[in-house]
Image 1: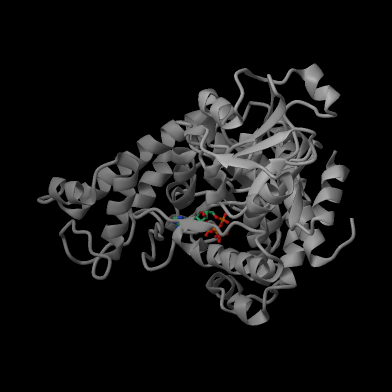
Image 2 (image 1 turned 180 degrees about the vertical axis):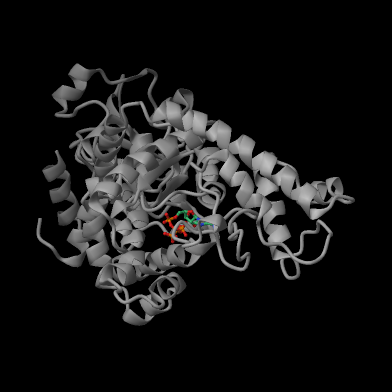
Length: 482
Ligand code: AQP
């Protein structure tokens, strides 16, 4: 059937594009529309009806439903029912994957379809959808157009979230507040993909044994933070080769100048004897990570904003050159907590790789050690608990940590500690941090015993099924043969 419609469209000089679909998603139009970064208003299901005057095909916009009374009136029939499987077989069709043309029937199109300049439809082959202009379709099918639908009340979320953390070093409360916590908050909505980006980790020297251990540790940290593998996809970057493959293609479109502007590269390479090409180039791989899944949102800490913008720029560049290919993602950075600072030097961000262990509260720190770190955090010579980054960065940082972990607003904290000194305030911050760590670590100790390998394997398989059609689309567009 796919070949037949291809022939019809070519003969009629109609522009179209076949969109490969991962097998697992193929039967669920809502899922694969979402996967392609589209909502159901771009889907065009084709339904075959048996009427008292023969077969008709009704084409509607995917977010609407058919009003059979109206369709009967438009088609001028008194009887109307969905064709049975047997009847579809007689027409050489399979249920659920009816193509948009080439059927021996009368065609009816609902007006709402024409609000979009292109739509996605089945092809008769469950591994391919087709993208085309509905006006072209109307011409070749000689369709009757009218109003025979009502708006569906369901809303398909169009949100696709992708983010990742490197399994390098020890995760800290900055990673938790800036990233992990945002992921957990959003996972009930849309498709959420959380990656353990081991390929990014090797851009600086890693001990292979420790990297393996840290990869499992990070998976357990994801789960302890509240990422639920039933709701979200968790996998290891190197398990899905599409990331490196798309990264390579994108490399060929990123300019040296663009890459040299990446501030994280400048920071991380400064003063180093050896700087790998990987460290320079990893934002392109990150762009690949994001663009592969038609990601709409990337929840990250403030330091990653520039990299998400690079992903956008590269996506835009390829869209301009090859036509719409990538969804352009936006970084989602929390209003507060997007940049938790070092406890020792509050003008620097808290970082896994800080040489001074006292600068950072690690998620797996002994609570008593974390308490000592807070008590010795750098403040200033004043005595007022005031949120003022310019003059009081140390205190502002502690206020932010308190606020993020305890849920109080900055104002409430300032009021609460109005007549308290720094020592008393630090004791309260330490208490909040200790309580948080105890709770987090109890969850961590539980999940570290679970079958993490299986969760990661399942995640990688699903991720590949989602990403591979996109990679194939890019390969085709750049001119690689199938
Ligand atoms: N201090 C921070 N405050 C808020 N968010 C932060 N993130 C990192 N530091 C802070 C966010 O955590 C995620 C982890 O990203 P990553 O593992 O790719 O590494 P990174 O950004 O390089 O993190 P680090 O902790 O600074 O590691 P090193 O020391 O290795 O460079 C990202 O979303 C990041 O924004």
